[in-house]
Image (cartoon, rainbow, N blue to C red):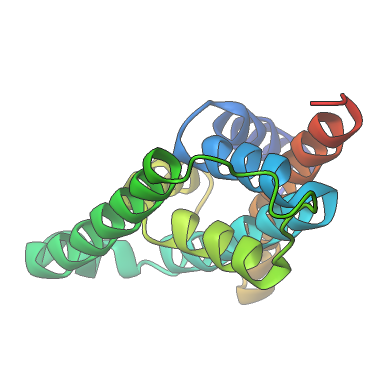
Length: 172
């Protein structure tokens, strides 16, 4: 694949990452609730989840998922459950940031939240399928496909880590 194609794909992935949605809400919530480290772990988890999805999209498994709507419905169902769980946590918790005057930090929760919100969001797979379909060809080698998925994940994780760092240094 040519450098120009990688650059174009990277710009499209960055534009997808910076688009506000549930992922941004989770990174913001975890950064405010647990500080910089938890926000960074959320961003890294999200990037890994997106990398997995990107790899699936690139390898052509999305055609299997869309051919069998039952699998897509299962993914949607679990995605709804995760989003509802996060929503109820936000609504029911009166105080996210303080517990006995200490910030509650749970890096594993941050990582898991990021991973789940990205991996259980079928819109991400649809986006990645649309993006990568423009760049895939029969002459692409396996290493190129892995590189494409990795670039998408690094861009995604980088964006959300940047959000966490910016938010934590803002004094909020």
